[in-house]
Length: 132
Figure (cartoon, rainbow, N blue to C red):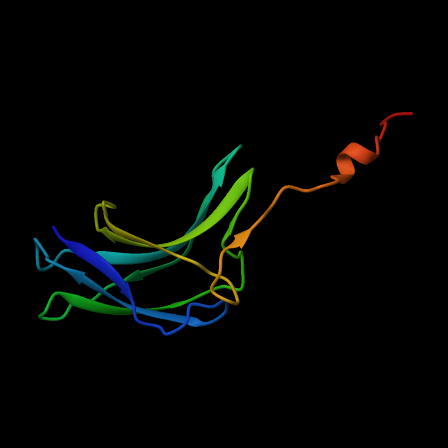
């Protein structure tokens, strides 16, 4: 099954409406499909996945469906040495199978934040002793 997600909004910014379209060659005409707005953390430690919104899709005779999702104000997309936050749109069927995945950047200026190395981390400059 060929499926794709297309963002039709001119800008992808926090606290704005994200508009798009899904094109899918349907195997079963009555099968349910969903678009998910999600972000995840990757890197050292525990990886997290948060579904912000899930919307059922209604396909037209051309096997296309439009969607509108409300983008939250945060977290921004960023990449660091220890952890990164990435945003995605995901298309799934009623069985939860992933059919398409589209990464995108969420930030006020459309640019991913790159976190560099901290020159003088505070934790190395002062030592706290507990219980004394």
